[in-house]
Length: 209
Image (cartoon, rainbow, N blue to C red; front, side, top):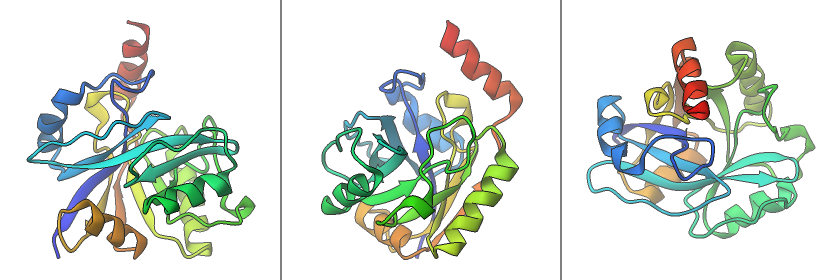
């Protein structure tokens, strides 16, 4: 099985608060030593395909209780549904539901203990989290308590931070379906660290340009 390096949480210019250009993605992915990324815009879904890198179709859905990442879907999930219904609608499309940054103090966070429908995975490493070590520890604790796979993502909003956290995936192939199956089966390991202070400053500078 190939061991793929995938950043599971990337925003581009299609998100109102992000600044990475879509056409720059293949070069950025290769320069970071990644095999691919999941594009997870805020409540916006427009699948992107490149020949030489993996792009997982996704969206970061604003549920009534907080954000939920949908991977491998085929159409947009409405916002402001309950977290449980959001997860069910993702599954109805054959997608994978991931709870991102469940303990980042400045994000809208879904808590696992409040759910009736468990997600397929938990983002236990989010490079953009305000308190990276504490957030990662608490998210990992919950993932293991509920026996859920762990993934990592940069939550990148600028090109420089792509890949700061990513996921090692033991997938049968580079196809989207095999990658989604590997996530569901827990053949994943999040790696990386927090986004640098320089890149946090860059993110702010992009915002005010």
